[in-house]
Image (cartoon, rainbow, N blue to C red; front, side, top):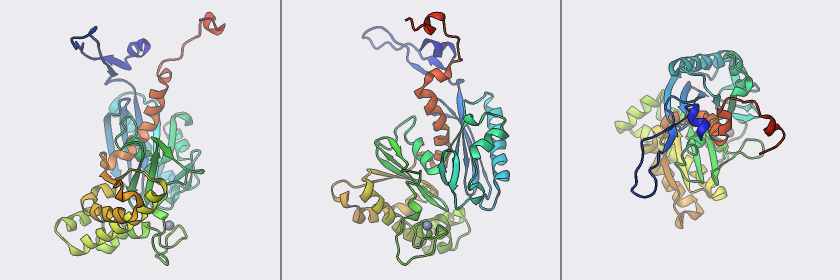
Length: 351
Ligand SMILES: [Zn+2]
């Protein structure tokens, strides 16, 4: 602990005198201590957060931008600009950068991203590192739903040890956490909830299949059925009792609930956390999802599935991206200390 105090990474709190034993001084992470960056490239926005080691947020920014037809050469520098602003705002060099993308990532390469095809086949972490003139090892990349789920695991377990985080936007992704650990599958494709088939024969999906839940419960499908241009217009209509909008969201809730019931019948998680656009639509969406989970989940009679709203709203993804970095350093605090020369005694293995 002493070296971490000396480096002003940890700080001592006020003396606690409990009346029993010696007075103690609780330790906490210093407010001006190290920070990590969480970056997000998504279908309709890019975002950044600066996070301290205790998980608290020091700075965040998000800009709306349509990345559906953009090239990586445009998308990555835009995020790099946001990150430079964030570093300037917090005034210190970050430990590293976690990067979230809306697709499947294998060893740093984006292998499937139908909604932002400009990222397909590239290594966005390497490009971001090059733009920021940092070593490639400073940037870690993962799928956005996995990282949003991580935000509910680290540094605080907010949703228990077994849950599914569902990220609802144009696409629908899920981060599956079992026993406190992310379940990624053999090749990172676990949690592709959006492509669970709920109708046969069903609507065609860009993935090549038919009847995928994304075509019924994805944001694009909801807006089209409701006859609204964007989420704000949809919310306005819902708040004013627009029957078409209410029916569109209810239908989406039924479709989403049916897909989730299939998932829960297989992996038996206790809780579903709704995030992304689904967090915004939660009050209107949840009743139909709950009904489907009640009838479709075999275990529901013994233990109803908890359906909750993400505590982080639209910031879950960037928080989880930063947590990729903060978790690594908290689990290996030696990495936080400056490298030192080993003494002759240590080199010889003497204690
Ligand atoms: Zn599909």
